[in-house]
Length: 264
Image (tube, rainbow, N blue to C red):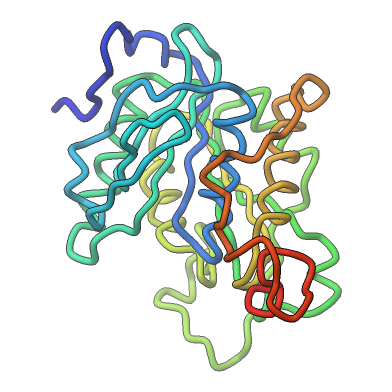
């Protein structure tokens, strides 16, 4: 089954042994905003699509260079690059969740990626102050094939710690991995789908609340660049599509930009 549709002159052979950054549509859209920053700051170009966009809510808009962007799984990178980023701008259709996960799994396996890192956001309201002092945490399978990036992830970040109230009933209380992930969208399904593959993988979580999540995305992007060991070579740049993202540039009551009265 062919799940990847490349743009002209791109060869999918470049995916072999490369790293794939995959966002989970989750709270505050922080993973998507983070990938916006990575795409813009690293100068990545759209090199193809995963699937035909029929697993997500229909969406289209204009990109930074005047191109048409969609809500489907768009792949960004450069020929021969060691890093590729998927951008997904709209949520998965409720009736297409299994098909969507299968599509991503097939794409990862058939193209022999060297590693996959899932970015996800979690609801900070479910945690106490002590846990929130560590904004970024890792979620790794119990065992995986060694890979430098995943090993760096394990060394650099603490494991995810959840403060789950007694009234939350897990569908499978005996399950240890993947853990319960509040407001994380399809993250658990993605981790489960990759668990029995030969692809080294893991997830990075960030605690957040709904609002102006640009700073959350900036710190998340800086973390990803640090894990990739290229943070000293890249200057983060906000894409043009962020202009007016959270309202007008001046708040009506004198707030410091982006209508802080509404978005925090």
